[in-house]
Image (cartoon, rainbow over all chains, first blue to last red; front, side):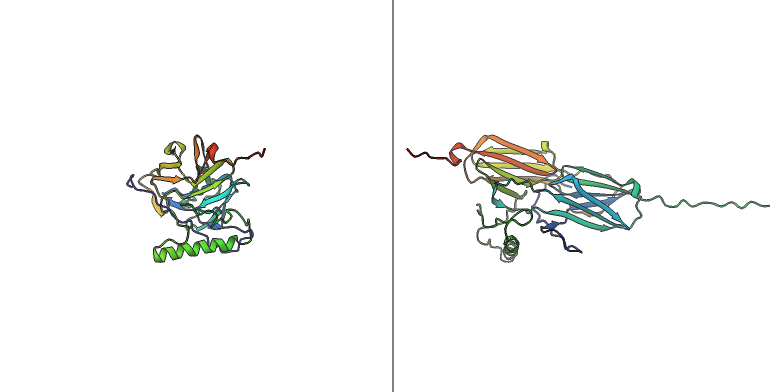
Length: 134
Length: 153
């Protein structure tokens, strides 16, 4: 990774939601990094403007869903002069191919980035069965 | 330059009934700009990171930018004259040699952007706050730029 690279503006991508939203408003897909090692899968998601308590993480069968609510932070008497990015909820779903140990999932949230650690379930250890002679 | 009020759609929910239409019209504009490489009327997306929302009230300007994963000490904010410069660097720590990536959408790099504010500002009264990856810079308007009540004798 070169350090001198300039960051470019990326348009926020709207979600093509599988189900219709009950509330009006825009829903975006957060940018994510997903990587794994032998023991766990880690997911990093950029969700700027979302407070820790407004993040919801769900794991249903093998579908992982993350979503974040953005509270309006503009004051009532502010009028828009220039608007380049939109504010909306974040939502994204992933299908996991590995079996996850649900009890040990960890989530951390710092500076608008969610870090989710999903430990892989311990594989059944092969067991040797000894036959005792009568 | 600033497109005042042209695409004044609400940021959360529906503030007025044509919000959705205006949003669509902005997206159409973006599309046609992409096709013809020519800016449409008034609004032009800035190609400089970060994207900025600028709002004002009677006393101050509010500049907001989404900067996830950037620490406060990696940010440099300067106000000179009517200009506000935001610069910094986003670094993404290495996760070690052994990891295998499935997706890599988050980007790291340097950025620097200067925006001109539409009125005079008081450079001594600039307040910046970074919370949950959202930067809010509040810049006090200069006394001369504030609305004045004129008494009639």
